[in-house]
Length: 254
Image 1 (cartoon, helix red, strand yellow):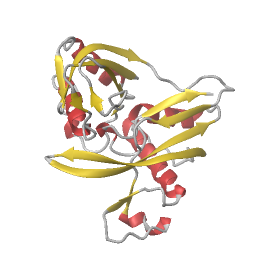
Image 2 (cartoon, helix red, strand yellow):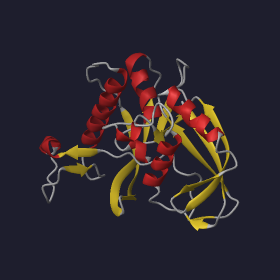
Image 3 (cartoon, rainbow, N blue to C red):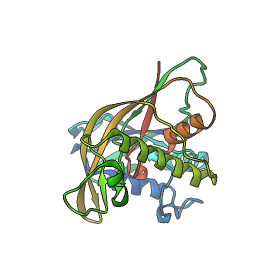
């Protein structure tokens, strides 16, 4: 389930590429007086993801229209956010230095196709982050220059490492969310690398750089557990750091 938030810029300001923590904080603020008020304290996945502020631009001009999409497999979370935003209509919100007025908020479903003969593609709307822990590096033939706790998957690494870590992450989140114990299965078969990006992330006054990648995942018609897993990933996000705006996914048919 998804929430489309329509925004109007109130001031001219540079587009802040390191907005992730500020936007995450805004989501938590909307959940403050609800059953999700302690969500930010939960360890591990928060089971929501969000898009860029779209369309992105070097400068946000006063009066320009922007949109934001928040996705989650938790219907109640999306409905709670929608209810909170209803009270913010025509009011000012800030995402870092960027200032907007909330114009509208609309709930909609974004489901995998039911067509038994239709193909579809899942596309990363924001970079997918995959971190390979130190104890798995040898398995993938990766030798880092320093003894890092983990290594970001980069385009020079084997695609097998990306797919395997991505599948394990998705299975782990799914099992935790639904309190199941599904055995590992192959989820991804056809995927196309698009781009590697370095994204600035500012947290607790310090700025770091996150390495992420953009992909297209191609699928033939499917059902059963693979379909359930992919629908969950479409809503919760692919890879890690979803609640900071990484791994937000979109779908195209055909």
